[in-house]
Length: 136
Image (cartoon, rainbow, N blue to C red):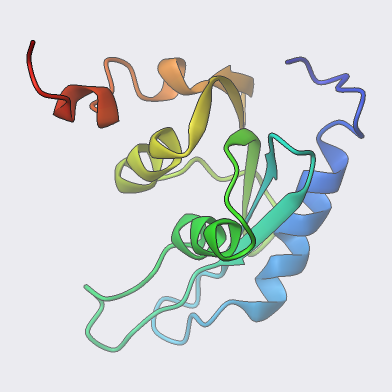
């Protein structure tokens, strides 16, 4: 996929991720995060970070976004965009890269500060569902 996608490009994802910031619950870090993805059916889902006083139970924006996708019928991610509280592109943490990998296609694109990259580029040699299949 290129930045000239026929279905609206990256701008709808940037706008959805930025809009998700309004729902972030970040009283401890004061670092709101918004995320958005286009699914294989063309729909767009978004999420925001939701912190918790125990910190370890905090949900990243990618987690709530994947939850929203699953609640709305699922579908694999074809493009992903994440922003910080200033609306600047934010790279997913390692945990979230793994989560995105689980729900991505072979050609999923992730917007980074240096342009769109494949999942393989941001999480090389990823562990996934195929690794859990019984050996033949």
